[in-house]
Length: 131
Image 1 (cartoon, rainbow, N blue to C red):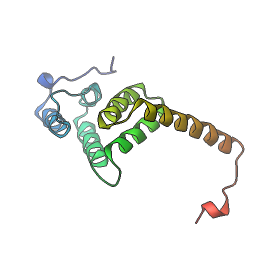
Image 2 (cartoon, helix red, strand yellow):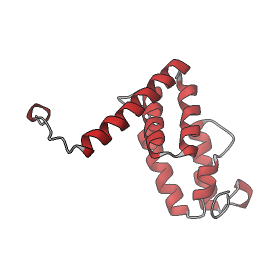
Image 3 (cartoon, rainbow, N blue to C red):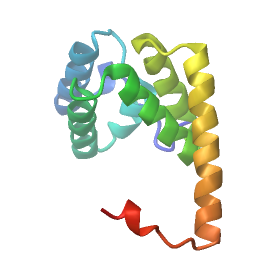
């Protein structure tokens, strides 16, 4: 259960409903995820976070599946179960296959392992990587 509970649409203030409406319109859905309902206790944080997510995840140089898979990789590294579930679903909707998910998790696991080794050994950065 969310620390402060969840604010459903019917109980939301006009300010929160406006953000919820934008989420639904942008994502072409009729539901609001629990993450947003939890953030709705602080409308400023809700609005700011939604605006940032909307801008970053919008079409750009990276396609939707790549962005979602990157979000999933960071979520797995940060061990955020909610974000892993949410962005796995979004990545699948954008076209991620089971094989892509398996390979992504292999890369994430390997990157985490080698990052810890490089940090633990305090490996000096090669000059050719600095240019």
